[in-house]
Amino acid sequence: MPEGIGTPRQIEPLRSRYAVTAIRHRGRRRAVNTLISGAAAVALALVAAIVTPMANAATQDLTVQAESFAAQSGAQVEPTVDTGGGQAVGYLSGGDWMRYDGVDLGTAGPLTVSARVASAVTGGSGTIELRTGSLTGPILAQFAVTGTGGWQSWVTQTATAATTHPTGAQTVFAVMRATAGSGDFVNINWFSFSGGGTGTPTPSPGWITIDQAKWNAQLAAFRAMPMDPAPANAVRVPEFNALCTYSHSKPDDPIIFPGLPGASHMHSFFGNHSTDANTTTGTLFANTGTSCAPAPADLSAYWIPTVYEHGKAVEPKSVVVYYGSRLTDPTPTVPFPQGFRMIAGNAKLQTPTPAGSVNQFYCAGPGGEIGRSADGNWPLCAPGATLMFQLVFQDCWDGVHLDSLDHKSHVSYTYDGKCGGAFPVAIPSISFVIAYPTSGSADGFTLSSGMASSMHGDVFIAWDNDAQGHRVKNCVVQKAKCNTAGQF
Image 1 (spheres, rainbow, N blue to C red):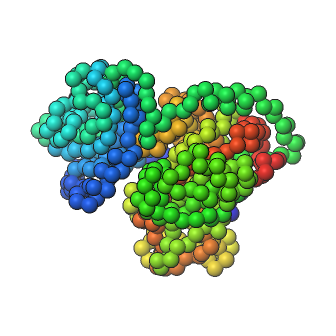
Image 2: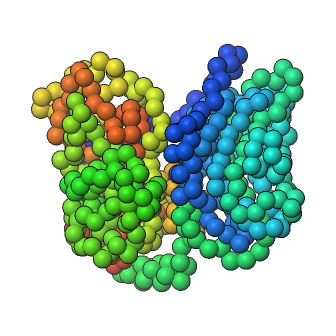
Image 3: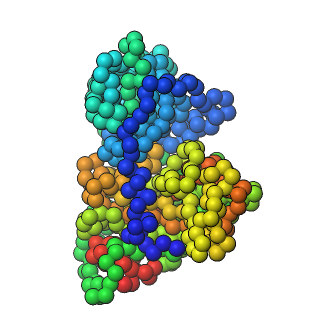
């Protein structure tokens, strides 16, 4: 099993993931397929109805990731090297479109709409139209796109919507209009909406605003905590951990499908034994049974898609949840607030993962990997080795929201060893290191979410404030490796 979050084996996959090559082949236009119809459209509409933006009297900097569409025609999702990372939608030309459900435009009043775009066009150009209700509905805002210097050279364009714009939760279409012969003319990272009337935001599923008074009190207590000096022989790696075993399985997801039991693909849960579709911060603290140590200090819920071998579930034999830091200077790191939640990975990503791919399953132990499955997507481990996966979560936070519409937009990965900009707050870098009791076979495996590339994980924080605070201060801020008990 890997030593800890600071080892080269663990850091290198993350570094590789964001060294995205900006070379793209634009001359060959792919076939355009309109996605999402019939039952699939109904299912995604259900998701949008549940995971809505903040239900505001005034929209406050609502960000909609471009790849979070409910339906599309002509779009392709790809990585981006833009600040904040994640994915973008590319290969967009005239006539292409994306649909976003449940976008809360607030009440009547000034509404500022922004788009994060990149373009390598030198001759032709185009326009992005945001329309409400349908592909031909009223124009909410539009952005004229010209060359920005490259397909990964990102700029933010801003437009003002009319005060007569539709209010409340709306279906918004992004429609591409291009001049003749332009071909692919734009990549889009995200859209944002701010303004839309006056009033006080009211949290709803999706964007959840932190209770500022409670957070200020937690921070004050953390900063007042004395630091226990690390011994001279301490390993200088900023890290503590929760040592977990498998708890239970359910087709539930309290982050994506809150209140809807059975709405998700199957998940393997570790941590709090009570986790189900109806889980809240309150229920996590009310149910003190957990499969993670230290108990009852950590009552958090953690989950991943279930792995299947020949149709039979293979549950983890152990999961180490590392809390560490990838910052050059970990001293600004603060604890997680209660009820914080986030997702790493992409359940919708269904692409091959041949040997050498980043963020893939691997073999640990004597003999290591001795081959690949017939489809090339899974490692075949030696008899003495174990199937493993490491999943690294975002470590910079906006300091405002406990959760966001796509459960990622309130957090970001660090790219330069520090947190700043829209994500100024350094939080512990969580990493799941998962060991499965199997070596695999040529037949490979499947995930409940699909291919190996769809591996993802969820975190719902419920730590005792003192226990987490002391660990963050002694182990992460002081840069000293601690064990599960929080001791050097």
